[in-house]
Image (cartoon, rainbow, N blue to C red):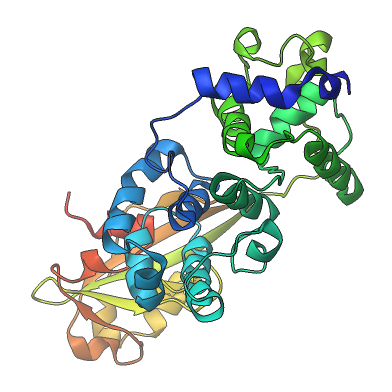
Length: 345
């Protein structure tokens, strides 16, 4: 691990201050609420998408107290379309814990931050580093790529012991001064996002390239190594797109677990026969199959089959839910494919 002896941290800090990103709306602040919000939103989500949601979320919930006082429905509604909705539920629960257990102030150490809902080791370290200058290592996907390449760390990260060794190596590389921690942490993130890409990395632009083991080997794309991969699956679902004579749509709230947990949604069924079974025989005659489509989740493809019908309120007596007018449903927390389906062309 020769790079460790060549002031990796110093080079990252200097590079970040000259070439790193500095214009993102969550940068240049030590407010843990804003940093935490951005870190949660950026998990498995592109910066370009978060740039749209982040300011709207802050406008509605400017501080942890206002977020904690909100209803989960309000939080999910504002999160609608951002995906990975467990993040929003944990975000709301975390805000409530910060207010109830910590007097409305985020804990100042990564170790205590990890006890809050939805905050893992790397996110806790990012908050503590950016806001409080704590010497704590981050290790998200991009940073794993930067460090395994720089260090030539070729052990399989699907093995827990190997990941712990990488954590130890990341901790050993931290700058000595806490004042350098924000720039160092941001620099690793920036390198992973803009230079040390998964494919076709821009090695000539990297401040670590002179001592990077992967670059010397000419095989940067072999790092990081992780052999265990989750298998993709597929599921077919039928959606009852029921409207009344005035154009209101019938929606029900999803269970607290499973696909689209806690969101408002069209009634969902495993088969078309199950969908028909909840309707009176007369109402079934008005069913019309719309164009099916595929919605891609992280490890699952949802094959969605909308079935449209104009129904009288009495036809849905077997279902739990209610009618929502065109003025009401856009303000609900809806899964992205359902929102798109309901929106007029």
